[in-house]
Structures are given as C-alpha cells and as structure tokens.
Length: 323
Image 1 (cartoon, one colour):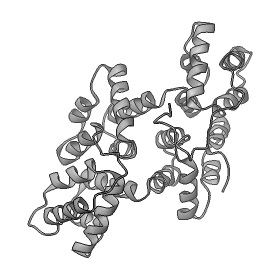
Image 2 (cartoon, rainbow, N blue to C red; image 1 turned 180 degrees about the vertical axis):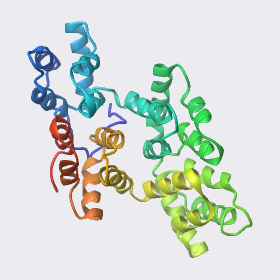
Image 3 (tube, rainbow, N blue to C red; image 1 turned 45 degrees about the horizontal axis):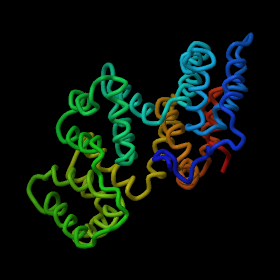
Image 4 (cartoon, helix red, strand yellow; image 1 turned 120 degrees about the vertical axis):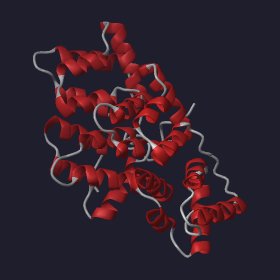
C-alpha cells in the first residue's frame, strides 16, 4: 500500500539493502560507545526512509528494551537532538507534536498552525488528529478552540477536520458559482461575509480552487490575493493567503517559509526542522527548485551559512544536494 506520507519528489528514499537489525545494532554501538559516534547515527538515519526508521525503532526496542528516541534524547543535545528525534518519529505523530508545541505556553505560534494545516492533505489531517488524541488524550479541535478565536479559529477547525475534497476532477460550473459567491461576499458588499471565504477556501480541492480563482479574476478584474488583502485582516487573512499560495504552488509556499526561517538574525529551527523532515519524502526537491528560483541562491547554501556542526551536517544530508 502506498503511504499517504510519501510523494515522488522527496530527497530521501527507501534504502535498498535494508536490514533493521543491522541498523539497530550499529545505532546501539554508536550511542553506547565511549563518546557518541554522531557520524554513524547521521548516516543511518538520513539514508533510511521514515517507514524504514520505524522498523529500526521496533527492532531497537525488541533488542535493547529501550525506546530509541529516549536514548537519542539522553545522548544528544540542542537542535541536533531535536532533528534526530524528529527523524525517528512517525509523520502523523511528528505533526501532532508540532501542533501541540505551536499552542503550548505563552502565546500561540499562528504561523506554524497555518503552515501545517494548509499543507497537509485531508487524509494526512485525519491521521494527525488520531495521533494527537492518542498522544495527548485531548482532541486537536478542542485545543485549537481554546488557543485561537474568531474567523481564524473557524477556518483552522474546518481544516483540522480533514474535509477538504481530494478529487482531481474539476467542476467548471461550481467554479463560476463559487467565484460569484466570493465576489458577493467581499468586493461587492458593505462588510465581508467571512464564512463564505472559509467554506470555499477550506473545503474545495486545490485544482478546483485554481479554476475558481481564475473565474474570480474574470468577474472582478482583481486577483483573489488583492481582494483578501483588501477585505480581511489578521491571522485569518494570513491563513487564507497561505491557502491561495499553496493552491498555486505548495513548494513555493514552503520555500518562502524556509527562507524566512533562515534569514535575519536568528535561525528559526522549529520551522526549519519541521519543513526539512516533513517534506523530505514528499516534495523537498521541488522546494529546492523554488528556493533557488525565488532567492537566487540554493537552499543548501542557505543552510550551510546559517547552521553548524552535526546539526548542519544532518540538515545538508536531508537537503540532498546543492542547486
């Protein structure tokens, strides 16, 4: 069965001569030896697919009676530790934990919530919700409800529900109708009908929305982006703009997020780790292409100049090459 977490444009693929027991033993030696053999850990974990890493985790537990992630946590530290633990975490659990971190403590990380919920498919969202409940004994929706508000909350809850249509078929009649509804809900009235925007942008398929935005331009002589900017504000506006960006080009949206994480004073490792790990088997090759196209230098070189040590080495291995 093809995994819903694997695409065709990733940098990491299944390792051909894979043996979970051989890998588990090599990892155990790398951790248990005098001084950790980071190079060995990096080469194994970045050259195996997530599905293969899960088999190593099982094997490790069976052979040594320990959780691999706990041993990594005990032995490594800082951003490098976070990245290595992320690599051995199942994708749905990883996303669930990222969502929890985005809502924990003082202040909500709206950008992270927006990024995760706009870039995951409906089927992925259903698995993430299940994982969230399993890990935290609370529903994702309840946590989103208590940490956000207003139209932003409504839209996030709609996305978290995983009800977006996934079919590739487009309906021209519906696109015209929806474009008209959006026009009437925004440009063509006093006050904006936010619910209409949420309903259409959070439930229609990406190909359907592409067509709808074309129709919208025909009716209003404006790009949907300009209308959203003119009509809406705050986190809700950011969320709808993110959806439009993803509809048009998800890898470009994520390249922009990476660019923001890597430029300026500090590095935003939370975002950097999440995108590099979560897209490494889906579309990281396309993200690299978009990064180079938009910023004139490669993602590889941006990581190289902004990070260091084993953390840098691991990120560069996941990145998979220079452009």
